[in-house]
Amino acid sequence: MHKERLKSREVLDVHLKGLAQCDPRLEPVIAQCEEVPLRESADGFEGMAKIVVGQQVSVAAASAIWGRFAGLMDNVCAAEFLAHPEESVRGAGLSASKFRTLCGVAEAEQSGALQFDQLVHLPPDEAIDQLTQLKGIGPWTAEIYLLFCLGHPDIFPAGDLALQKMVGHINGLEDVPKEKETRALTEIWSPYRGAASRLMWRYFAVLKDKEGIVL
View (spheres, rainbow, N blue to C red):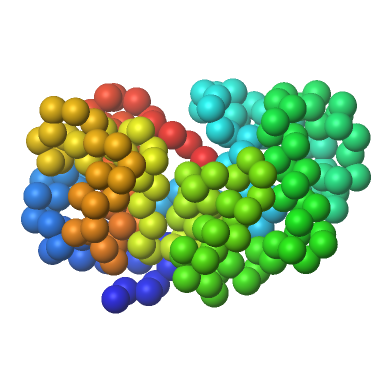
């Protein structure tokens, strides 16, 4: 199994080649998509905060909110976040629920209940389980963190609607597969599901002629 973390263009290209060998149906998809974005993100509290900020808002809104949020702090970290009163953080554009989620994440890190630097060493199921113990952090958020912030090579966020649509399209399904079916259909892409998820988002963007999600 290829264990290189998806933290460079070179590693992603190697994994895309491996993916095409796993499933030759993807060869023309890779060719059509041309360059597949790496979308590497910071890890730790900053990376998680950026994911939470961007949930359920447009790309433009997420970028604007993140700019204001990050601008409140010299360094986006748990300690600085907790030092700011709710009104100033909410004033950056965060909803009450997102503020509460980030408070929980920051407090868990400060107490030692959550150790971001240890997540990279855990099996993905254990890392996801740790993250989803925090209120407001669901499986999609945890998987996105592992995928983009840690560069895990074999994560496929099967609860993502765009990914579900593309998996259905690749498999010629009339109906969009649900999360459980999507996971089953993508097992063939292991151990390259991290590259596969990036490819499917890019494919979605190409087919819909838009950017897709941005983290």
